[in-house]
Every structure is written in structure tokens, then in C-alpha cells.
Length: 524
Image 1 (cartoon, one colour):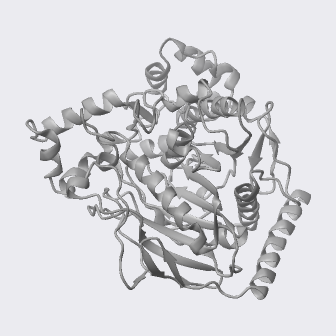
Image 2 (cartoon, helix red, strand yellow; image 1 turned 90 degrees about the vertical axis):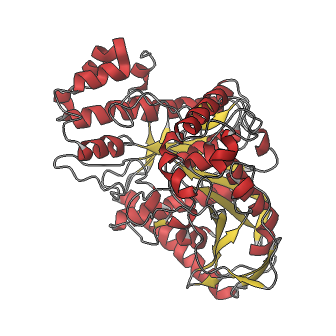
Image 3 (cartoon, rainbow, N blue to C red; image 1 turned 90 degrees about the horizontal axis):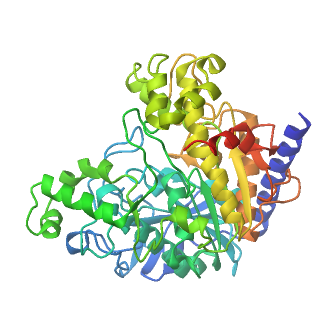
């Protein structure tokens, strides 16, 4: 209770300091000049917004599967008060509509409403998740981050699925168009930071899931030097490695990245199976976007290495210490896999049962299946669903993340964490009797953003935790160190301790031991 009181006091001080700053500083202008023209935004009580701002030309026609080109200049004042189109995708759920509009390369800028003239606020550039196949930047309302943390937040769209990661032999940029878009949006933020009161020399990239995987990959890219000052990786370590069946029973083993050779082979096969057997590129470019959207899922996790943008597999680059030396926050959620296992069980309750559990383990872990079963017996967890989701959380997410943190820490400063709210917002919509989603994949996001414009935090404890997390994240963006007065100390990766984040319990913990990482080192 005492710790909860301290955290609540920190939150109150944040609100008070913001209010005092607002009283002393006039409203920032709603008309600003960027390198492509003049923008007019809108504001609410705490923040300014500039929405749907193009950072690149529409990737249509000959620019489909080409590197992003700078946005065209416009004359007059562009109204930046409405969201831009999401990149082509199928409907991913409530609030995430389907789209077939390739004119989608937009950024959204959120700043404090009150920005002092000549201010140089930290700039945080957000890369959204969604398995490289869904999502959009405008789904992440950043008002709390910008206002409470006194930072500028840029969220952006990037090409997804087949549009972002398609490849063919001889096609320049194969497998990396989505990452190139993210880099182009980051460059836009750097060029235009001053217009919004930002510091062009203090840029932090941060992302979750596929966005976090892109952030981690970016640290291994030659493009990062001189462009990235700090990085925050959430549920997106370069080392993630899902065994067979982990993402969904029956799905092969997978990783966040793919070799250029395989990406191009998949591209040829896709072209041929869709009637393009001559000039594959011209034929595929001629197809309507709506015809290609159903193929998006075939190019999930197809961000390709062996390319000019990513010369090495990012996992290999970490192991060989070939990455940018900037401060990093890195972590994940305690119960990541409950989102995937729960989703599979809701789709088909027969997939993960006491009867199928041995087969799932055998398919995932081969000759080590019996050893895994002994470490994760159904009797200990009460159900096969919980045993399976715990084992695969540890094997595929928590322990690889710990390994990646240690490899990054060999040459830079890393602040490791685990989000562990046992009653986190159920963003995945998992409703199974007797099965709690816990701190499942993506359940940390409501602590930083109002998803779809809605604050999903239900309790004072969650709101207090969110205020502290925002203070950690934005202090890190400002200084490269998340520690600040009034908050529990956050250690760097120098031993076995990580910061565990839960309402009323922000404390150091041996997260690797909790996830049995010593055991998983012995499983091949």
C-alpha cells in the first residue's frame, strides 16, 4: 500500500506540473510549416494534433513495391484534422476496419497544447504492431504520453503484408518496403521536428509486437546511424522464436525475420499461383489492391535480411555485436502467449486440451517434449490451455527476450522490464471460463495509449501504474535513463534483475528465473 501511495503521489505531481506549465505557457500555434507545405491542426484541453499528414508519395502504380519517395508539396494550408487511410488490410477487429487504399503513408503528430517558443522537446516515433499485416498509427491516441510527459509523439502508417514485404528476384528493396516506410517516417520527423517544438537531435523510436521487432531490426541497420538516438522495444526482441504450433496449432515454427532468398521464392510462388507467370512484377502491379489484400497473411514475418537495409539476420547481428550503440528499453508481457493460445481455443475448443497437449509439445519441442511436460504439467496449472500458454510464453517470448537484452547490454545500456498486471485490459477479447488473459500480448498498450481514442484503464491502480510508465518512457526519451525522482529504481541489464511493472508492485525481480530460462537453455 505504501508503494501504491508513492506511485499515486508521483502521478499527482505529474498532473500538477503539467497544469502549472500550462498556466505559464501560451497555446502553441495550430498552423505550422513543414517541408511539404503548411498544416493546420486542432487541439483539446491538453494537446495539439496534426493528423493524416503525408510523409511519402502514395505507393501506387510503379511505386507499388518501390522505395518510398518524398511527399509532393502542396500550396495553401492543408487541414490536418482528419485521419488518413489505413494501409491495405483485412478487418482485424472492432475499430480496425478493412482497407484497400494504397494512398496510406501518413503520420500523426501529437504535442502538448502548451509549447514554449524555441522549445526542444524529445520526439518519440511510434511503429505500431499487428503481425506486419494489420494496424494503423492513428489507432494509438497519444494524448497522455504527450501531455504528461511533455514530449512530441509521431505515429505512422507503413505498408503491410504483401504490400510491405513482397519480394522477387531483381526487385530492389524486396522484403523491406514496410521498414523503409518506417525509416522514411522517422526521417520526416527529424526534418520537421522544429516546426512542432521538437528536438531534431533527440529522436526515440518505440514500438510493440511487429513494431517492436522493426525497432530491434532497425538497431542493426546501417540506416540507423545518425537517425536513432534511443530505442524502446516492447514484445519485439530480435531473438523471438516461436516453435511449431505456438502462434496457432498446426502453424510451422516462425521468427520475425526471413532471408531475402526465401522472401523472393515466396514472391515468385505467389505470383505464379495468381496467374502471373510472365513478367511477374508488371503483372502483380497491375492487380487491384483489393485482390492482393487476401494475400497479406502470406507475408507476415517477412521482413527480410541479406538486404542493403538489413545486411544480417537481426538475431545474428545482436550475437555478433553489430548494432547501434544507443540506450534501449526492452521487455515484454508476463503472459504473452495467452493471447494466441486463448484465441486458438476460442476458434476451436478442441485444439488445446488434456488429450492434445502431448502432441502439441511433441510438435513444438520434438525429443525434449517429455522434459517440457515434466516442467509444465497440467496438474500444476489446472488446464492444458494454461500449461501450454505458459510453456510457450517462456520458450518463445520471455527467455529469448532476456537473451537479446544480454546481447544488447554487451555494448550499450539496456533497461529491461516485464509488464505483469494480472488484471490488465483484455485487449484481445479472450473470454474463456476459468482462463484469465492476465498480462497477455498487447495488454500493456492501454498504459501508454488510449486505443481507438478510449482509455481502457479501469482501476486507480492501473491509472497510477500508467502514469509511472509514461514518466519512465518519456524521461528515457529525454535523457536516455528512465529513472527519475519519486519512482522505484530501474536497474540496467548487468545481472539477473529486471523491473516488473504491476499496479501497486513496481519492483525488481528475477524475471528470467520466473520463466525457467535456465531450463530452456537446455531445450533445442
